[in-house]
Amino acid sequence: MRHSVEAAIKNRIVEHAPGWCFTLMHFSDLGSDASIRKALSQLEKQNLIRRLARGLYDYPKKHDTLGIIPPDLNEVARTIAEKDGALIQPAGAHAANLVGLSMQVPGRIIFLTEAASKKVKIGNQEIIFRKTTKKNMLSAGTREGLLIQALKNLGKDHIDQKARIQISKFLKDSPKEEIKKNMKFAPAWIRALVFEIMELKPKP
Picture 1 (cartoon, helix red, strand yellow):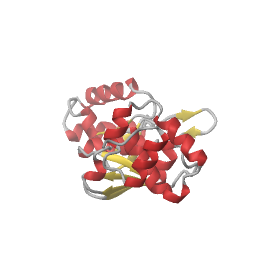
Picture 2 (picture 1 turned 30 degrees about the vertical axis):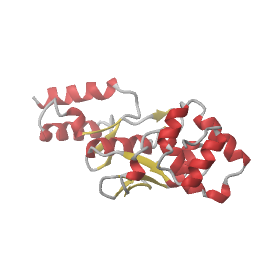
Picture 3 (picture 1 turned 180 degrees about the vertical axis):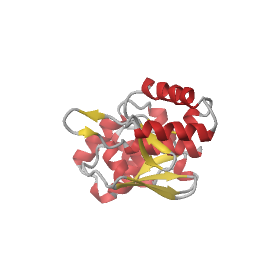
């Protein structure tokens, strides 16, 4: 029985591209928690998967020269949020980097969430989930929501011409109505800046 659970789990893992991050819940239809945990432990010993934190694993990417590649922390955070049934939104320097407004790659990345605050250590990096208000999460998961957090990190006095060009480029495929809707709860200076750059008129 154990071998059949292990084989079924292994098949499901290799059906995904390397880089896939997962938890026990991704195999809940294949056996009991105990049998799944045992199978994952065996697959870890075989170096097929890597344990990132308690109950959190990935199917690591391998590079011919560099060997095993560190996990994508965005993928890890998404998997943790899925496990917790929580909505998350990249924030801080991480958001600025994702938007292209900063080249800095932070060692600790921050996500806003309506769920409880917590920290998860992955290797020598840290993912921080920071509890915030419902208002701050209304545009979570959208390009505009990501931009709002990036601009909050950058600050009103650090928006140069290069940043304005990047903002325009980042939102070029967003429908105007989506921009207006998702900017509704942004700080006034961010909303005004984005509307000006994207040549949108605020609603009277």
